[in-house]
Image (cartoon, rainbow, N blue to C red):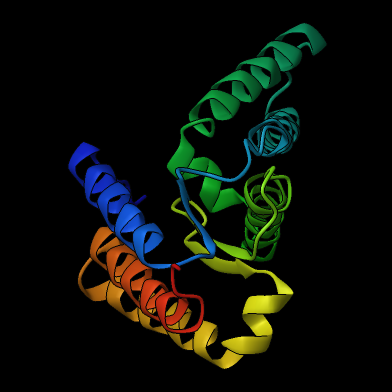
Length: 190
C-alpha cells in the first residue's frame, strides 16, 4: 500500500499554497490512507472460513459438538484478526466497492471544504485515496464550464501513469501543478 511521509506532505502543502497564491478559485488537496474502515469484511471472511473448516472437520472426524465449535471459534478469531491488517483487508474488498467508497469520500470532502466555506467561491478538491488507489478531481460547475472535463480527465490519466513509474508523491505534485496552471489561467488572483 502506498504511503506519504512527512517530507511528501510538506512538498504537497507547499505546492498547494503555490497554487492558492496564483488563483482566485478555492483549491484543496486531500490525500488519505483509506476511504473507509471496511469493518465487516474481515468478520465475514472469518465466519466463512470457520464454517468451511468446521464442515471439513465434521466430515473427516468424529469430534464432539463442543470440540467442533471450539475449532470454528478459533478459526473465526484467527482469520478475522489476520484480515484486519490493512493490506489484507483491502485485498478482500471488491475494486468497484473501494472506488465507490473513495468517490463518496471525495464528494463529502468537496462539500465540506468548498461548498460549506463562508466565502462561497468557485473551487475544486484534488482527492487521492492511497489504499484504494483512487484519484478524483471534484470541481464545481463554473470550473467545468470554463476548463472542461477533458482537461481534468487528462490530468487524472497522467497522474495514474506517473504514479506507477515515479511514485504517488511525484505524480500528485505534478497533478497539483497542472491544476494550478489551469486555475491561474482561467481564474487568476486579482
